[in-house]
Image 1 (cartoon, rainbow, N blue to C red):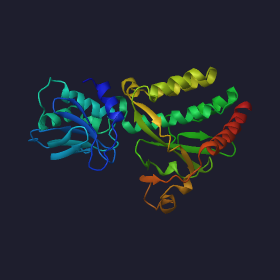
Image 2 (cartoon, one colour):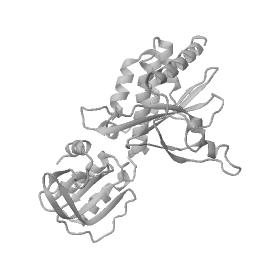
Image 3 (cartoon, rainbow, N blue to C red):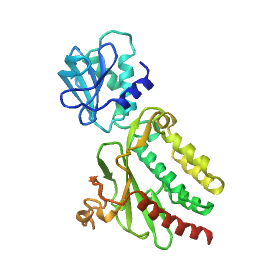
Image 4 (cartoon, helix red, strand yellow):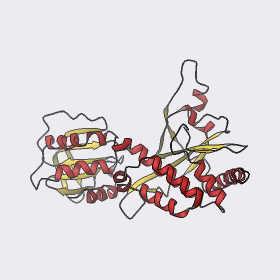
Length: 336
């Protein structure tokens, strides 16, 4: 089975419900499944156990596993590889495609490990050109936010203000910086998990500074099948086609500087979770900020994971805050 078909299957697999585990047969004795926590699984039915050790931090290998499937009844004596939730469908689909590529013969646990080892770096989070799953979804979230900001604009200066504010690369730890007299900065955090799990990678992302109080914008997305969402390249093209002049020239330069991996960035389709809209909150309300700031002497930097609640501004409140700062920044441009 081709990788694209496998990835579509993965995107549509529902999570397990109780003792029933949804499964999709993709050839030989190979099945795809999803746990109740949302983790993707590759399952080999009636498979010979592996004779070697799996060396992968982001997956767990079990043997002698039994499944109860609504369509197929009991599936016994399985070897099961369960990936961590942050391992994306593209990487899993590459493993599954490799595993199923050689005809109809049944696969063993060692065959599964061989396929995993063929894509070890990808499964551990690394793609070509330094791209990773977190960078992919992070950039998708930033551009989704930028596109939303552009819909609020009414003239060329406001559009240029938005494009200038996006700090795609460089020295800034924050994704958007408005350096008008009042100052407004925020960092976009994007997660493909079912909870608002994010990582504060630098204290500067949540520390108020010369540009005023920092904000955090949380976006929850989910991988979907082709035609049900948008790739990162789709977002880039839509934004580029919606602007012109100086704004378009600057945007294109910023995209070029990202050194996009076109294969990776065109292979994954995402959409925002409709039931969990983006939220924005002041950095002072980010868990841990009141505990870690100011940093103690001898601690130059700090990062930590957070899980946000739904307690933040949403919808039109976000748009109003963004519009106010876009207008202020456009006035700066008008006076240049």
